[in-house]
Length: 194
Image (tube, rainbow, N blue to C red; front, side, top):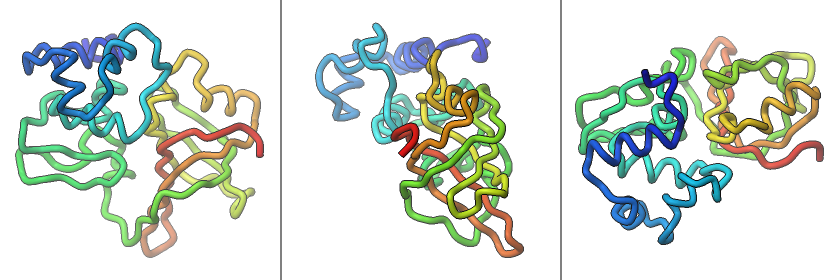
């Protein structure tokens, strides 16, 4: 059932489960008045990373469940797992459940979020899994995961970049492990070309 639900359906479902009004969600998340309604009625084309994190926290769920219906819906009031940082407070769930195992694994190093240019070599729009080449490694295909909600848009900038083989600028974190295994987590789309 959750696979057929839209982002808006999942937000409304969590609001109903927690008996929250749009105004209460906005207050708790620190959003401007009307922000949730604008999301529901398409006045906001997408929700950016920081606001998605705040919305998931208030709705006691994860970003990935809101975006794609993947993983546990109910994280409870004491648990909050961030897709971007991978941090979690004490509670009943593991951090980053619902993400591919290659993202949830232990890493030796994780970079700060940074602006990078990539070309998408392959892409799964349903899961956000992809392979990218970067300016520093143009011949290699590096495993990546897109967690930006813009991937779910009908004219996703990621889908368009993949189809046109365009180079795009994104905000991402890189994770590495001894032995040379690398993974990129793409947080936000900035621009095509550049």
